[in-house]
Amino acid sequence: MRLKRRKKLIKYLNILDQPINFTPFVFNRMVFLWALLGLIGGITAGGYWIVLELITEAISFFKGWQVIPVMASAGLLAGIVIHKIGDPGEIQLIVNNIRFKNGKLDPKNNTSMILSSLLCVGSGGSLGPEAPLVQVTGSIGSWMGKLFRLKGEDMRSLSIAGMASGFTALFGAPLGGSLFSLEILHHKYAVEYYKAIIPAFVASCFSYVIFAIIVHLGIGPIWQIPNYEMNDKFDFLYAVLFAIGATLLGWIFIIVTRQLKLAFSFLKAPIYINTLIGGILLGCISYFYPITRYFGHHQINELLEGNFTLELLSTILLFKLLAIALTVTSGWRGGFIIPLFFSGATLGLIIHSFLPSVNLSLTIVSCMAAINSCVTRTPMSTTILISTLTGFTYFIPILFASLTGYFLAPRIPFIKSQMEEEK
Image (cartoon, rainbow, N blue to C red):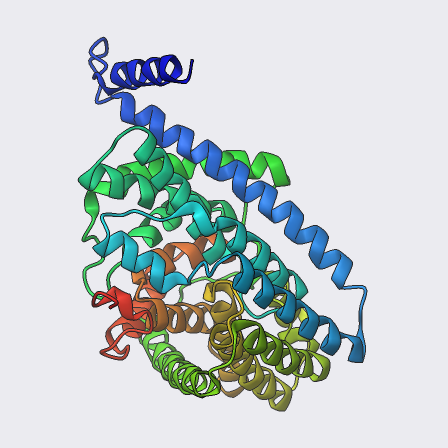
């Protein structure tokens, strides 16, 4: 019976391998595969987001000093999950496998990634759910590619399309999510895998619709910044100047993160000890500065609507960068894009306090774009993402800022596998 089922499966796969000849359009069976991947990616992201919100709501009951033992416990549990089930890796592993291992992402550690990231993100770590979603949906693309016997660029394209579907679902930006899944793979050549762009677009569109239906996502910006009208021809120059300051902040973040990573490596402790230490330190930061807790999805609006003094804004920025660096280096799982946007917005508010005559929105988006482009090397997708998320419709100032951060970034990228193969 098992042999008969295998024969039937091979027969159906052979049918799917045949091109569709009945249509005069640029259309083939791969479109169905990209769309199916997008549907699965949207369902996966929607389910993950609902569970994450439930966990976050449950843990948010604990206030004040209680956040310290809560985050310590979450770190310990996440470390035990990784130690017992398997290390799912980080964004460097994803980039490395796409570039140097024929685009194959192994789904065997998805359980570990999902459980550990839910604990880390839901308890208040300064990393977001974008990296776990990208890894899980990208590995689903690899699994589907293996199921349908794809090889070479077709396999890599399906993995990239899976990554795009997960990223798009969270950010609600199909174009930005698609470009991000390509740009993140190389520190210099943004479209090295340009053949994957259409698969990424298709999967992203289907994922966005499904995710929006599941979580009742509204259409429009999620971060409320003041309206902007480009009345000054020097706005482009302002964008570049603000971006230089944000790029310097990106350098500081990269240096601090590398030093903390070195410090944790000297401990030579099991992963659950590192995550426990990270949880204690993050809990202490969250106790004194609650707005630095969590990855910033809701906290950015709180920051923009609040009336913070210059001294408090500077302190928040300092400890938020430290919290992100600690979360990354202590073994907590998650992504750092939205936390970097939060840091950029904080810097924008600080700069605006010195230059109140310059439009606040221009200051904020310029800093957000530059710091993210400096760290992730994704100027095109960053431009589109920030425009989508803030409603800042003038692309050019954001693009100037993004390119400034990109070109002034360190020669060795923060994600080292963007440049060379990991040994």
